[in-house]
Length: 259
Length: 359
Image 1 (spheres, chains in turn green, orange):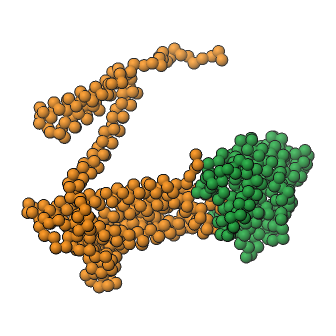
Image 2 (cartoon, one colour):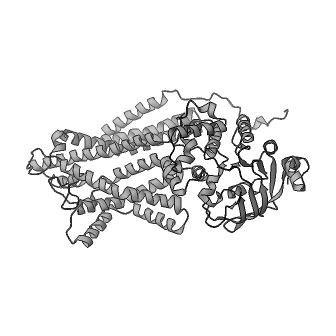
Image 3 (cartoon, one colour):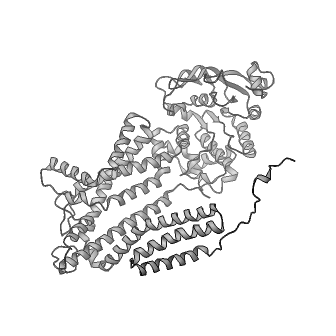
C-alpha cells in the first residue's frame, strides 16, 4: 500500500516570497527518507507540500508537480482532504485532542470523518494502531483516560498511532523527536524502523545521528544566502551522504564545519 | 578563582537585618483605630471620618516605623501592601453595601405568595407578587438568547476560522466593538422603530424587547466566543487536517468542543448581563399587572420594569406606596439572586466542560 513520491520543478511560495526553489526528487516507497539542513531552509515547508498541509497557511502556494504513485496531488479536481487521508503527518509537538480519551484520539481520523464503526472493529483498529506505535502495553488499561494525561513521549506515540490508524500510504514526520527525551526518542526510532515495511516515511530532523540511524535516503536542504530561497543541495543514499557526499556544502554541514 | 570583586566598596552585608516584630501591623492598626475614634469624637466627623482617619494613619505610620527600624525597601513594600489592601476595600465597599441593602430590604418580602401571585387586582398593601414579571423576564431572556447565541457564535466562527485578517473580518470586528458600546436605550428605540415600521405605531410586544436585548447580547457573545476560539491551539486544527478531516468538521468536532467551556461561560455571562436591562423593556414590553405568555401581543411585565414602575409608585408615606416600595426591593433581590445563580452556573459549566488533563 505504500507509494513513492515524484517531485519535479517544485517552487513553494508564501505570498510573493519564494521559500523553496526548484526541488526535483524521487522518494522511494517502503523506505525512510530523512531531510536535514539548517533552520529556515525550507525542509518543513517542503514536507508540508507533500500532503498539501502548507495550504492551511494563507497565501501559501506551489508551482510544479508532486506525483504520489500515479496521481498528481496538485492536479485539477484533486481534493486536498483526500490527499491528507492518503498522506498522514506527525508534528513536532505532540498534539493529542484535549477533549478526547486515548481511545477516541486513536479513532479520531475515523470518527471525525464520520465513518461508522462497529465496536469490535473500532477496538481492533485501536489495538492495532497502538501496538504499531509501541504504546499498547503502556496504555491498554487506561484507554478511557484523557490523551493529555500521558507523558510527552507517550503523547507523541499516541499521535503516531492516530496517524497510522487511518492507514495512510505515506507518513510524514516533522521533527517528531525534537521535544522528546532520549528514551522516548529511541522508542520512536524503533517504531520508524518497524513502520517502514508498510509505509513510505519522510522525516525532517535536526539530529544528524538520527538521520544516519533511521534513514535509507537523505536530502540536504540549504539556503544559497540569507534572504535567498532554500533549495535541495544533495539527495543520496544515507550511507553515501554520511561518508562521501558529492557536494562540499553537504560535507561541511554534516561534519559541523557549517557557515 | 583567586580574583574577587573589590568588596571594600560595598557595605558589609548581613543576611539577618533589623525587622519589625510580627505583631507590628496589628499594633499599628489598633493605634490607628484609636486615632480614628479620637478624631471622630473630638471633631464629630462621624463614621466616615473615623474610617478615613484610621485608614490614612495606618497607611502613614507603618511605613514610617518600618523606614526607621528596617530599611527603605521594606518601608516601600509595607506602603504598597497597605495601598493595595485599601483599594481592595474601597472596591468591595459599594458591592457589599449594595448586597446588604438589597438583602435587608428585600428578604422580608420573599415568601411563597410573593413568588406565585401576580399584581392583578391587588390594592393597597394586600399581598401581591412578581409571578407575572418572573415569567416575562424568563420569556424575554430566553427569546433574546435564541436569537443572539447562534448569531454570535457563528459570527465569531467566521471571524476566527474563515475571515481571519480579511478586510470584511476587520470591519465586522470594528462594528462589533461599536455595538458593545451602544446604550441600551438606543437599542430599545431601534427595536421599537423596527416594530413600528413593520406593524404600525403603538405596537407593544415582548418579542420586540427580545430583539432589543439580543442587540446588546450579540456583541458580548461574539467577543467572548472569539477570545475562546483564539485560545484553541493551531496545532489541533493542523492535526485534524492532517488526518484528512474537512475544515467544517474540524471546527465542529475539534475546535468547538475544545473551546466549549469558555463559550458556555461567556454566553451565560452575556445572559446575566442583559437580564437586568430596563430601558429598552420599558419602551417595548411595557408593564401589566397580570401574566401574559404570548410574546407577540400586548404588554408583558418583566422584573426590571416591575422594579422601576413599583418604585415610582412607591414614593410617599401612604400604605400602598410603602407596600409598592417593599415589592420593588423584593423583586430587586430576586433579580440579583437570578444573576448570581447564572454566574455560579457559568463557573460550574466551565468546570464540567473544561478539557481534562487526567492528572
